Structures are given as structure tokens and as C-alpha cells.
Image (cartoon, rainbow, N blue to C red; front, side):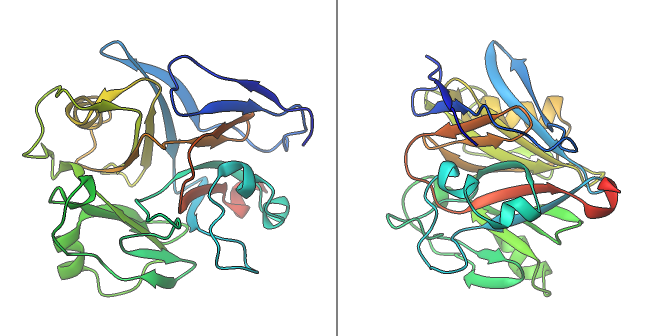
Length: 260
């Protein structure tokens, strides 16, 4: 892809959109759309098991060093054979970009489940795990429930925190619209198994983001992924966000049989 046109939105304080003037595969359709919730602009993206696969990705095959950006990931040669529809930063990470919580990629566990107490949003209990098989089912569970219920290793998993919605209830620490407002992204899975990804295009509180999942999307379990570094790669719409270094990624592709 060549001839990138960079557009920096006043709302996106930490990132710019990079719009490429290259070819997008004809079979790719965007899963994302702009929405408004209580005067806050959001990007909402929907993955469905009948059409899509979900996985995680951290680093190129030839190195253990994380990509650290969607731009770097967009150059990954594997994506030419299996084009990406959508990608988003996944769970939280350390200074080197390595996951600080449970992380599974292609069925390989790279980081164990983190049930430790500590500071920061990750440890605002309960936190949780987004996980599943590539073709589904996909799920979000709070961490203790995951530890108690899940015996088989999933194809992918990313742990972060806090949970936004737990069994249909807002996280107990949240106000309906608290004072802590940042660019944030999250994932939730509804009763039919669809994965709902949301990124705010303006600073948003935990409570408002959680209410969007519960009240609008009708999602009973939703997980905050990260804030301030939130970024999206929406390939069909030629949006490739840049910004601070990131860590692991959630990647959505078309199911092979859906393309036939």
C-alpha cells in the first residue's frame, strides 16, 4: 500500500488515522460503523461466527519482539494470504509490549492467568478474559469464573480489566458517568455469540461505556481492553490508526467458507 494520507482528528488525542491509497481486497466488507451514544462518538464493530474468525497476534514468527503498532502489523506477510478485516489492541501489556495477563495465540499459552492483586485498571476486580476458538464460540468471563470453569485451552485469549458488565450488571466500582474519561476500547459477547468491539472517538467514562454495552448492545458480559492507547485497523474503510506503542492484538478475518 502506498501514498498514505494521514488525518489527525481533534477528538483522537492519542492517534491519527492513516488512510491508504492502495487496493483493498474486493471480498472484504467492513464490520465497523460510527455511532453516537449520549453525545459521545464511538466506532462499533461486529464479528459473527458465521462470517468471521478471531485470533490474537503479538509478534512476527521470526522474532519474539512485539509489533508495537498496527502499521507494523499491516506489513506482516501472512496477511497477504489471509487478509485482515479488522484489528484492535487487545489486553494490557508491560513496557516491552508483552501481555501482563493470560494470553493465548494459535492455541499456545504465552502468559499464565493473572489473579494477583495490584494497582491500576487491570486489577480493578473483577477483571476478565476474552477467549474462544477461532471459528467460535467466543466468550467473555470474569477471571475467577474462567479459572473455575474453563479446562480446555482456547485458540486465543487475552486478559484485561476491569470487566465492564458482569452477568448483566455494571461493574460495582462504576458510577453511571464518572469523572475519569479517556479514549477507551472494549469487547463484549452477546447471548447469540457475536463479538461486539467498541472504541470511543472521544474521552468516555467506564460507566458510560459499560451502559452502552448493557443497554444498547444487550451484552451481559463485556471487558475493558485498554485506554489512551486504543487503536483500530479497519481494512475495508482504509483506516489504520497510529499512536502510542501497543502490545497484543485482536484480529478478525473472514471465514474461508464464507468467502467461497
